[in-house]
Image 1 (cartoon, rainbow, N blue to C red):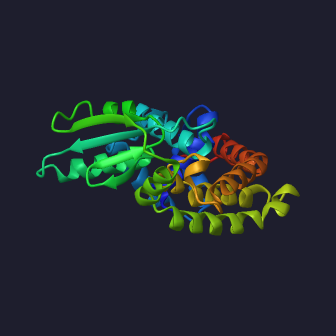
Image 2 (cartoon, rainbow, N blue to C red):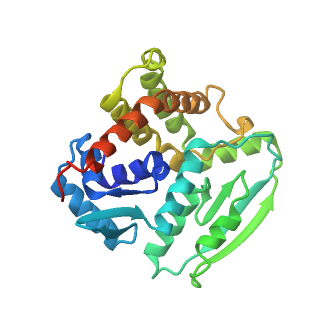
Length: 274
């Protein structure tokens, strides 16, 4: 787990519910649970502040960090993709985006592709991306300030259910994704009995819960959350998501209690200053 990701996950899962900010020594104590030394925490925090993800203020001799509005927006969007799933029947419509970006703006084109992938679009062919969910407004909003990006949005239906499944199979690596979901499912489903019995506790519960989020967080980049009629018959993605939600919930009380105890120690008058 990379220190930068750990900082964001700690804010997203814990610190946001505890005032949304943390003293540097509290952040150092939390990161120490994952073997990240204080010197690295200070460097990462300073770098994230310079990049516009963290902001800081002084309270006496102490530095207090909080996320910027841009960082909160990123976390909220990521949380929605990780925890939520589309429900209800599919209306059979595909939402297609055809883009044009000058060859000189390769970095911008790559940024556009990553954004499309994050929003659940798949590449049907060069510069043509499709999704069964209408998120075209979010794409337009993301690149509204980039006049060199041209986006054409179409809404259409295919000629048959078989054609729909073929388009889905060509636009996403569903076979590889399903295999990886299966591995994740096997790993965490085997630990459910222990979690249901209240184990692990304290520090280990925090580490386990953070590792769970780390292991699952990349799947929304790859999983377009397709309706059932477009998925392979042996699809394990839904089951993996259910196990993720249950495990995340089972570990919550112990993990949050440990964070509270750790931060309370760091905020006590006897705790050393920075």
